[in-house]
Image (cartoon, rainbow, N blue to C red):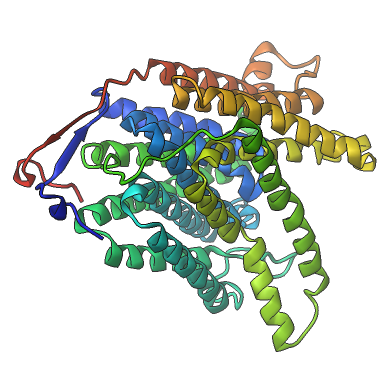
Length: 488
């Protein structure tokens, strides 16, 4: 692959954005990810729910950097998948250690480690997404294969034998996967070191490093709210310490990723694309395609998971090998990389994958909640009808607005307020607005409405910042490398 020197330039400095301050670069992604992470824990859940903060923060980073639309659509899928991969890790029991003074340090070690893995993978794929036009598709696909191989190695060497285990080994032990993700990410990083130029790899590794630091501090420090709540919660009006943990994690990780975007803002080079990318296809084809992708991801994978559960107690080398292959096949590692591959070959589906598929999972979690909608469980046609209709409405809105001006702002606003609509619906249906008569106004605002207030305030702030983000026309000029050195 030709490096920047092969283009007969010492270094390309791209000043494609309005000169936003460092504070704006940090706060915009931080508040966005605070909202996205809170929504993920409230309406999305699991790995697919983690697409919410991933898509939101990547759209914001692309907005801040003024990445061209032909590059942005696919780049956002990279960021969405990279952040969502961390959701493959189980951490509920790890957080449980923080509620006990005897195990609080072990819990903190576990959340810090898993948060670091989350941020590392997210930063790695954000960096790849920003530079993917300069990397051959064949190289990326080979890197994805290396990632999956590393994932299996980490599972088999550390996670499955429980060499280092941060869940409860006695009461309902969980399958951990953090080591598999680390091995996969390191393998992909080493491969990119070999296949990319020094300047390009500095950007990729830089985002990876800042993501690692942000994730470690975000989940580590944020999880301490669980310990605070367990020890002193009765003294405060705020009762949802879990949500404070999520808000803190999202805010810190988003801030670090925003700092990385600011740090490398002049050195990200998405403009030298060899061929134009078509981000708009035939409308009907677009809608049908995302419907098929959604059915594959959410329906086919469910069938395979049922089969894997059925053979989980079987013995034998062949069965265990098939179970491992099946485990990888249904994991978000494979599904996520498959979605990136689809966006690489059919970029007109990229916004649909990042926005519509993310929203679709939120609707699935809503209608699948037996406590909120128990009647739907016995009405499969109505159950699937709600999911399909709601998702197609959002898909149509995405398709319409990606053919108009201010596409990135539109995608962010669509994602923010469509997921907010699901969150508010869930709040109403769960009785969150049925206040007790003996509660004071202060208790209602700070305690009962705490989650709703954070959601609505942060959603308004994110929307205002997106609208404020005025983009100037891109200016590309050449300056010698000696005038400004690439930051590490």
